Length: 295
Ligand code: MN
Image 1 (cartoon, rainbow, N blue to C red):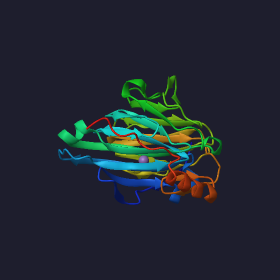
Image 2: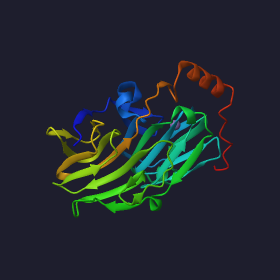
Image 3: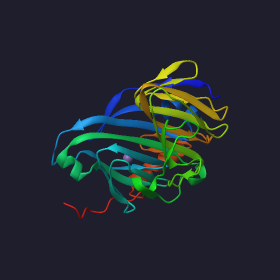
Image 4: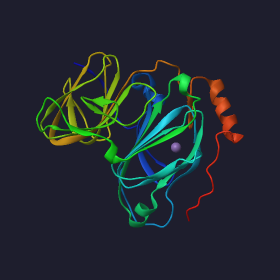
């Protein structure tokens, strides 16, 4: 049975652009080693937006050396990038963007959502790339809700469900292509249940609480927007829900064990590579977003 290492509480809230009120749950500036291959997680919302005709979000900016994974729980996110990739994702959809060697993108609320307003909730997770893939061609996976299998939690009848975004739960295979071995699951667990998840030995393992709370080994409680980081040793992650049940995101993966040097939107393995990233962006080598056909 995996022991709890610690519970990471949000290091504060801030706005990303004018569209995303986020709680920074973790970043490679604080727990890089423990969370590898995951670099950063921002939890946006839950928040309520009033209707507007303005564009709310973040204008064109670059990334290099990793992937951004956007999971929408409520609301709508619209994305366009310098490879021509783009689209609108809504509740239940996931966007898996591989910045790799360099991409420029913009992230806004979807126009339809902006017009009506309403509840907004999403997660943006940064997933590191192994050094040998950091300069690969960029890519984009728009993963709609219907492509992700949702299965019952094993070993406990009616205890809840698992939606597999990446990796595998039992026979259920997630659709996301990844560059290292990982599991990314949405979990919904009924009140007062004990759940044991089987994970590969030696992998990073952490649970983010979105709703409700969970009791972990050692009687510690993780609550909303808190991340329970487990030890890597062992294959069984066990926790219990309380009277409210819980909605969770499981992050698990093989640690990369490579140096992390990041600055702003770039995460590489050395200072030299970061300097090169700035030069390449400034000289236009990460591309640009084509003029919009939309109005
Ligand atoms: Mn971005």
